[in-house]
Image (cartoon, rainbow, N blue to C red; front, side, top):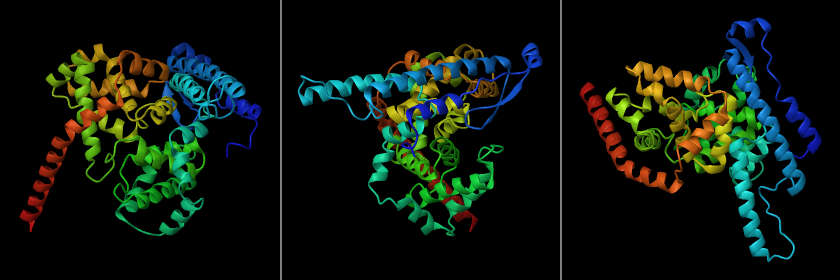
Length: 395
């Protein structure tokens, strides 16, 4: 998939993928709401200011693309995977220094965004999806889809119900071909991992993966590495225990990182999970514009699930003054929804997420999860007992 085009062809394709948006003169004068299509085929509504922001972002993406091409030219196509060896240095020392330099460069580059045309290759390599795929026969995915064809389970029934509701109106996803492709990926994974099966939210994640990776098999392996390695376990199991843990951890982090907001929301009796549950289950794919979502995913696949907390906290932090002056739960929801839907500048979001929110290590978040797990499991157990008791009363 990746070796058939020359670097020049890829560069030309990269440039053609990022058109400048040009609203009509009438729309510019009146600052009217305009509709336009983003790089991944989604119809977006925004005012002319939003369009101007998006054009500025796309120019930055072009500039960033030139940086990536220069690195490929000087260090080789897979420089981020293969540290070079310098003359006059021992093998071990050279590898260590080169790997460290490449890691620092790569982290900085990824936070600034991976060029769309390179995104499939880099995601597949850095996420661990390529390694995961290499551990099974080449025919694994085709064999799996053939083996499960025609089988009906609760998961397949729910998938069939959700297909037409997954990004309705999209030029490819909302077609018979798009539905069939998405169905094969979701059904295939539901049989690969029966503990997860299928959970609502995965349809949006898998759909966006299909748009980026282009082939359904690569999208399948990206979904597999996401659920099995990148995200916390049990996020998508039947009782969503992992997701409940994440929400408790997020609430604690909000109190530490944004205490004024947390105190005010507590006074309003606002539960952050009202908005954050969808953010974490859909990985922001239903909330942020697609081009912004994919910038978040660039970092997610390289730095891990802690990125979701950084981004979620940043959304609250960006609207701190508005939130602490809100008077009703509905006001809070409206502020956050309006903010996410119009976040066309991923650089602004990621700058707040990593520079203003401050450092949060994976180890720190893991400790927070372990602290919250007993309370979540006890709550879920109590809920199950209550449900069983109601069932017995009905008999």
